Length: 68
Image 1 (cartoon, rainbow, N blue to C red):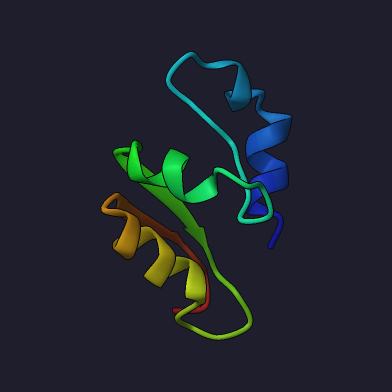
Image 2 (image 1 turned 30 degrees about the vertical axis):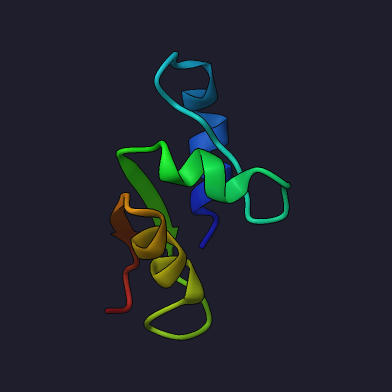
């Protein structure tokens, strides 16, 4: 769906309160645990592992999907 790419194009990464990270970085869980909200773009399934990662980190998952 290109959610992360759309956020990048809008230059939201430049906002002081916005951090854009992916699960491939070493401190992903640390950053997620210190975040208030975590973006959960749709995966191949209706419920992706990103949702469970966000919930386990303690941030509010923000689900972005048009097929649910």
